Image (cartoon, helix red, strand yellow):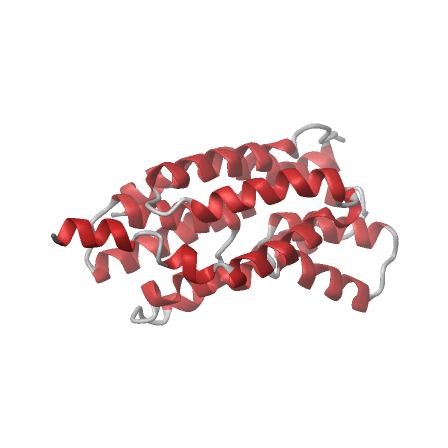
Length: 236
C-alpha cells in the first residue's frame, strides 16, 4: 500500500517540487528567517495561499488583510472537505490530517483513486493517509530546497510557477476521464471561458468561485440525478 500510494502521488511530486522551490526562492527575498518558510509549508500547506502570503508580506499588509484574502482564496477547500466527508467519516483520527492536507492536487488524486480502485475501508484509510502524507512531504521538501537555493545561490524563479497550472490540468483530465458524471466539469469549463471575458483579472478567481457555487446550488438536483436513467436501465 505504501508503494502504491507513492506511485499514485508521483505526478504531484513532479509539480510540487519545482513549485515549492519557486516559493522558497521567493520567500528568501523577504529576508525573513528560513524556518518561517519551512513552517509555512508544514502548517499552512497551500500553494496559492503561500504565494499570496509572500505578495502580502512584501507590501506590508496587515493581519486582517492577510486573513481575509487567504480565506477567500482558500474557501474552495471547504467544499473539497464536504465532498469526501462520507468517504472518510468512519476513518480513525487520521481523517483530521486528511482534511488538513486536502489540497487541490491531493483531492484530485483521492477522487481518481476512488473511481479506479476497489479497496476495503481500512485499505482506503491507509491509502488516503499515505497519499496526503507524501504530497505534504513533497511540498515541504520543495520549499526547503528553494529557500536554500535562494539564500545561498541567488536563484530566480521566473516561469517555474506554471508547474502548478500544468499539474492541476493533468490531474483534472485524469479525474474527468474516470468520472461518471461530467456535468460539473462542463459547467466549470464554460464558467471559466465566460469569466475570462467578463471578469476583471484581479477578481477572476473569487467571482468565478461565487458564480460556480450559485450555479451548482441551483442545478444540484439535475447534476445529482444525471446518472439515474443509466442506473434504471442497468437494473432492468
